[in-house]
Figure 1: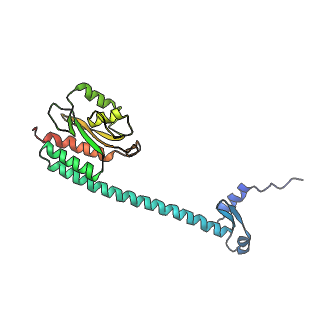
Figure 2: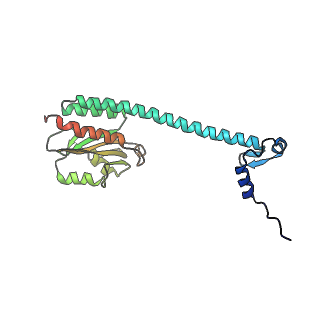
Figure 3: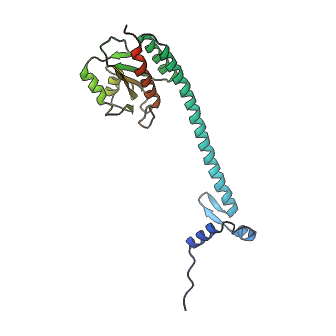
Length: 223
């Protein structure tokens, strides 16, 4: 005599997935069911479903809150970027460029230090720094390891080199290439906080400002 196949948990799950209205009209069965779970003592199926929905709603609200916060930060970043770009467009001298960058980066973006290294023969005043030596230019380029921008913690000597100084209290840095026709250099911003600039941080803003400088600087006459 053959034995009836034993019903498995997977069989029950598959059946309920195919018959999602199974519990409709079976109030007595639902009332007597208890489902243990990690969040506390046994509870009814309906209560557990409500708890799951509440947990999902909390998660969805958190995701929505994160999206709104990101949108708010992006709006603020756009406004700050717009003010800086307009100031650079209005600049008529290299002193104007320096003033626009310094005001924006220090007051609006709260950087502890910044510098623009310009690979040129002209004379500039810090934090606009002229790099005449081809060897120094190659040394700076090597820090990027072929990338357009870098961001994160670097050795103190490397951060100092990107800022055009001998030493610095800054411990994290973000830097982007300025790449224009006869107009090459580096825009770097740094913080004394080692975790302020992290490798996971997007450098889109810095790339954008570097692109604006690449277009704008050739239009400013040499003083």
